[in-house]
Image 1: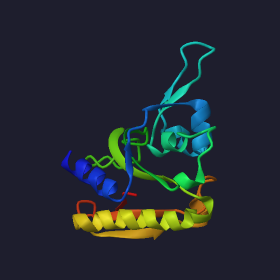
Image 2 (image 1 turned 45 degrees about the horizontal axis):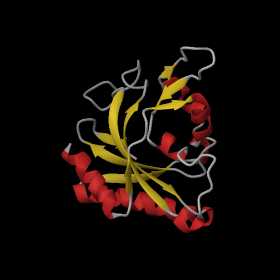
Image 3 (image 1 turned 180 degrees about the horizontal axis):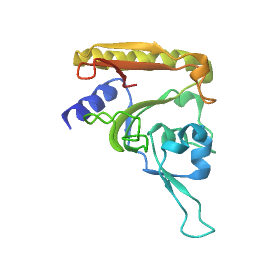
Image 4 (image 1 turned 45 degrees about the vertical axis):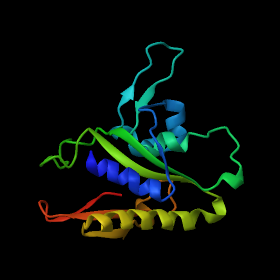
Length: 181
């Protein structure tokens, strides 16, 4: 809990607004906010009870509901950038699956996560992208964790990404770096 609180305070000092999104998203919203084919095998689906209702998914990341927050609304450019510190419980099936890491508690089906999410002027989006990875690096430096930033190759990106970095910390028990951001 102390680390979670420290993370939130760290982002608030960087002008991020704390936001706790819902745990569920309707299928129609989930399809608009992520490349569902990349997540489907890892998402927990909640089938609709009635034919007229819509299937739902438990969120795998707070980015999914945060990206849909202003769907169908006009955002005034003068309000940008809108920095959000999403804090949520996330749910993923990949954890503990056959062939996945199961030693210790590195992979679990339900976990708490804090994420940066920013609505930005498209002309300034790359600048904001770099600022966000810089904020993540600064956070890990403040904890004294050894880490590295890895640029993901274009062929490994999904349709929703034009560029991606992974921030990986050194896990001595595993003897390797593991993705954190």
